Every structure is written in C-alpha cells, then in structure tokens.
Length: 142
Image (cartoon, rainbow, N blue to C red; front, top):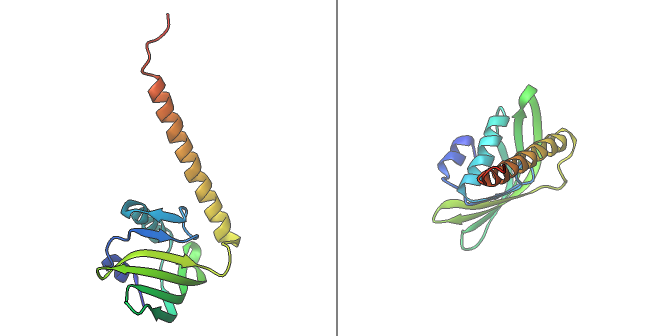
C-alpha cells in the first residue's frame, strides 16, 4: 500500500492529473511538487487501500483501483473511490492520472471552488502588477 514515504521515494513526477487538486492538470516537476505540498499541508493523514491492480505486459503502465482514505482537518474521515493510471519510466513514476466515478461535490467541491477562485485572483493581481510595472517606466508628463 503506498504511503507518504513511498510517494517521497518515488522521485519527481512529471505530470499529475487529478480533479481533487486546486490545479487539476499539473505538468512539470515544480507544478506537481506544488500540488503535493498543498495535499500534504491540507490533510492530517493519507492512506490508499488498493482494491485491484492491472499491469501492462511491458510493465510500463499500471492501473490501480483504490479507495483513498484520508483524514481532513477537523478529523473528518474521507473515503474517495478512485482509479489511478500510472506511467513508469526507468523505474520511477512519470505520470499519474486519477479518475473518479463522480465530480467533486459537497464540502470538497466548495473548498476547491474557493481555492481555485483565490488562485485565479492571485494570477490576475500578479498580471495587473506586471502590467502596471511595465507602464511605470515611462517619463512623467509635465
């Protein structure tokens, strides 16, 4: 069963797609690391119970049917059914895609909506600051 330690040993992951994250499509090691920091910072504990697994004949792709059993703030216990499709390169995880039999709703959906809106507002504010900084280089009119 994967644990936090197992994930840490897996090394950098190139791509992670999971609708439970504020950025559902993370491409590049920095983006995936940001998503992992968010997850590990949010949840009190993470556990994955694997129900079934399928390995491609060449061993480079694995499908895991599992239940993610996490403990959220306030000691709320979550049981999230998922399927992970994992690509392996050189013995390490290179890409993970998560699929759920539902769209995130309830408290998780609200939390993700708020988090995503906040991130969009930060990006907009940063773009506005960059635009204002670019315009501030012109000489003042007399």
